Amino acid sequence: MIIEEARAKINLTLPVLRKRSDEYHELDSVMHSITLADTITLEKADRLSLSVTGDAPEGGENLMWQAAEMFFKETGVASAVSMTLEKRIPSEAGLGGGSADAAAVLRGLARLYTPSMDRDCLLSMAETLGSDVPFQMEGGCARCRGRGTELTALSPWEGLPLIVVKPDFSVSTKKAYTLLDAREAPPSSDMTELCAKAIADRDRSLLTRSLSNDFEAVLFHEEPRLREAFTFLSSFSVPARMTGSGSAFFLLPKEKDRLSLMEAIKKARPTWQIFSAETDSWHSCI
Image 1 (cartoon, rainbow, N blue to C red):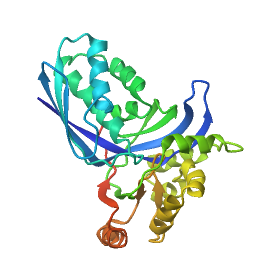
Image 2 (spheres, rainbow, N blue to C red):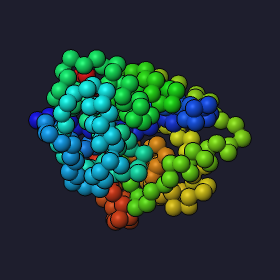
Image 3 (cartoon, helix red, strand yellow):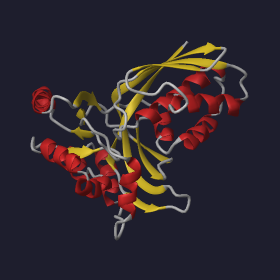
Image 4 (tube, rainbow, N blue to C red):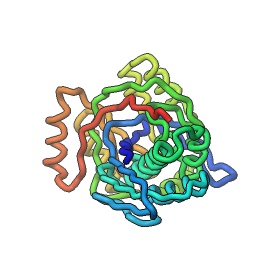
């Protein structure tokens, strides 16, 4: 039996530079693992199965299932696996939960069946499954270029206090990219350069100034509920940004203020999901 933790991620920066000829989008994002995580248990079995506790599909539409099928096809291992998922990361939030779960399945199956498997083979499978999966395979902190799969490791800034907030609605990722494609001109990646420097220097002030997400400008115009959520969270005078294409946000409070801020948000928005977390230095040993 193998147990894997599947950690959520946040995008500290998220410039979407252009649409590529392969229909993906060119990114230049700083991603960071956080302590909010799902737990995945894998056991050798004679058939493929998935049991879920929490809000996630149990069949072939789950990226975990697709990851397991790909692993057995690519490796030729004549076996299967029983998978159990304890789901904590909100779905459709921009936190990379599905990608983290798929990456955890690949890591766990490699440990379970092919301990000497080449790391690049796993990363190749991860890239096929989705743009966020390679980062979620590696973890830590990285500058993610290309369609998000070209990783340059950065020194993780462990222990930054976070509040993760998922409003009681979701946003279509397809719609978000369509809106971005209609922009007159894409931005530069200057904020990503600043963010990478802030992380290297452990400069919290510079980090705060560099936080950015291109989806905010287009989605806040088209999604009033999302704009209202950002306005509400920003009213606490704490750095707040959306992660991915939403609808989750992260806040960077001071540790002494974190609990009282969480209580205030919960009181005002009782149907929202609110999590206490930190940036994480975890990194895959695969």
